[in-house]
Length: 308
Length: 308
Image: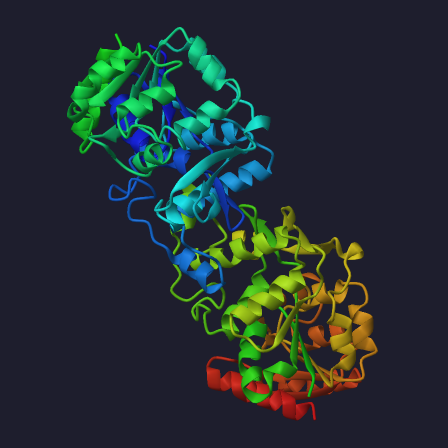
C-alpha cells in the first residue's frame, strides 16, 4: 500500500525505523526537508536526508540521533587548526558522505539522483526524495538578526526568539521529480513527528506540494511532535509560542488544517482530542514516545491501523 | 643569503628539514613540483607541497615520508563503502588539508595564495611556491598504456616500463608569481635529491624556468637522488634505465647539464667524480643518505659549504 512520509530529521527517522518493520519498505516514499542543507568547507551537507539514511541503515549515533555511531573527529580538529569554524560536528565517516555527495553533484547529478544512489549504497529499499532539487535555504529572523538554520539550531542551540522564517529560493524551487506523483499515488500520507515550521513547513513551502496534499486522494495523518506542551526534540514548542500558537497538537493541527484528515497525539494530550475534532480533523491518542525499537514498531503499527 | 630549492616530495622534504636548521628559513624559497597533483573525490591533492609542509611542520609520518603521523583512515573506509577507489591513502587529518585547499581554490584563490596561507598556518617561515598556478598533469606512457602519475606511482607501485613522459597542460602553464624572480635573485639554487624526470623535470618543463636557471647568477647545485646505482626512493633509477641513461649521478648530471654548476654525489659514487667534471660540472662527494635529523642537518651544512 503506497505510503508517503513527509520527513524532517531525528523524529521522522525514529518513526521510519518502526515503519519499515511493519510494511514493505518498497512501498514507502520519504519526502525529505532540504531547507536545513548547508555547505561546510565547500561540502554539501543534507542533515535530514542523512539522519534518515543513517538511522535506517543502523549507522546512526543512538545518543544524538544524528551523525554516525562511533565516529571520530580527526579531520574536524585539523580544519580547526586551519582556522575553520567547527561548531557543526562532522565526523570523519560522516565527512565521507558529504565528500561523496559533493563530488556527485559537481559531476552534474541532481540531488534526487545522488540521494537515490546513496540510499541504495546503504542498503535501503524505500525511496527517499529531497523535497526539491533546487536549493532552498531556511533562514530565521531572530532577536539577534537573520541566521541560516544551522547557525540558529546548532551554533545557538535554538535559544533565540524567532520573529519570522524565510525559505530562501523557495519561489524558484520545483518539487523534485516524483514528489507530486508520490503524493497523488499514495494511499496513505503520514506527516512525521517533525517540526511543523522548519521541517514540514519547508516542504509545504515548495510550490505545488501543499496543493498536492490538499488534493490527495490518500488519507493524510500527522503525528504530533509536541507532547504535553513540549517538543520531543528541538525548537518546535518555542516556535509555536513565538508565533502565538497553542504549544500543543492543536497548534500543529492548525498548520496542517487545509489537508489533514487525522491527528495522532500522545496519551498525555488526550484532553485535546475534542478540540481537534471540532476543527473537522479526526483525532486519536496513543503512546507516541519512541524510546525503543519496540516503541517505534508499535507506534508505526498503530498509525497504520488508525489510518485504515 | 637568498636560496632557492627545486623540490619534489620525500627526498626534498628530508633535505629541507636539514636546511631550515642551518640557515634563516625566511631566505629559502621552495619551488615545488605540482605535476603529481590530482583530484580524489573532487578534492585537490598536492602530494609534493604537502609532503614538504608536513615534514617541515613536524607532522609527517616518519615511516612513509608522506601523509601524517598517526593519521586514521575512517573517511577513506567509508568512501570505499560508497564504491570509491581508495588506492591512494588519504588519512582523516590529511583530508582536512585537501578539503580546505579545495574550498579556497573554489573561492577563487590561486594555488600560490593557498599554498602560502597553508605554510603560514602550519607555522613555516620559508616560502613555498608551486611551480605554476595552472594545472600540469604528469602522464606516463607505460607498457600498459597512458597513466596519470599517481596511478603509475601508487596504484602500480612504479613497476612498469616507461616509454615517454608527458606534462599535459605544460604549454599553457606560466611559472607561478615569484618563481622566475626567486631564481633570478637567488645566490644559491639547490636541486633537491628528487626524481630528475617526474619531480624536477616537471618544474623544468614549465616554460621559462629552465631558461631562468640557465641565466641565473646564483650558483646551481644538485644533490644526486641516485646512490650506488639505485634510487634512494621511487622510480628514478628505473626511469634512467628505461630512457637509456646511466643509472648514476652521471645520468642525472646530463639532464641538468645546461644549468648545473655543481653535482653533489654520495661517497659510494666517488669514482664518478672525474666523469662529471669532464662534463664541465664541478663535483664533490659526501654522505648523502638522510637517515636521521642529524644526517639531514650535516648534509645541508655541507651543501652550503660546497656552494661557497
